[in-house]
Amino acid sequence: MFLAKNRPTVTTMLKSDTPEAALAEIEQIRSIGTDTFGMQIDYLKPEHRTLPVVKRILDAMDGTPCYVTNYRGGDPNADDEMLAETLLAAADYGKVLLDLRCDMFDPREGEYTEDQPAALKQKAFIRAAHAKGAEVLMSTHIFGRFVPKEEVKRIARAAAERGADISKIVTTANSEDELQQNLELVAELKRELPIPFLFLCNGSHCRIHRIYGPMFGVCMYLAAIQKKEWESQPTLNDVKTAMTLAGYENLPW
Image (cartoon, one colour):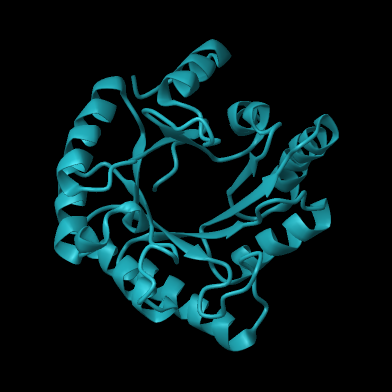
């Protein structure tokens, strides 16, 4: 299982764009402590987005589970079938949670599709990943606008219906009211969803949600050793402080 029991999972994302820097970053993260790593294939420089490099990085994690993405935009010449093929192949090299976008095979603004042929391809990908021993997170990133509760719930339910192990939805909070509604939605998703969820915010009022959301039902933290000023992810040290103060047991540090 990718997720920790009885507490939020700490996933620390690699921010390196070369394999050598990624290996050094893995050791730096390991020295602080984390439950799992996160690797964005699309974050690597184009010449490094190869399966041998993916294997090299996953091997360096020594069996620690890894959340893996391969989003559009990293390679303008790669279509969704090519991106999915590389993503699925990562399951051959380690314990992985694969990020499959909710509009995979039918790109849409808002990253969500109800197109039935695309949904069938998504289900087939999830079955293939499960057959390899991997887990699948279905993700939707809706940037620049607040997303009403029912829209979030519809997307999350679709991920569960298509066979995903975890639903990830990223929305926006640019006011105290939007922040409050998103925090309230965490409790509702916990009550209503049949699978774990990763519900996150970007925007001017996202920080409180990113730190406290996991304490009320969001299944994991996405953290980083260091982050750029415009990034929403908390640092690993921020997460370490918050979880220690909250009194969680069996922490990875």
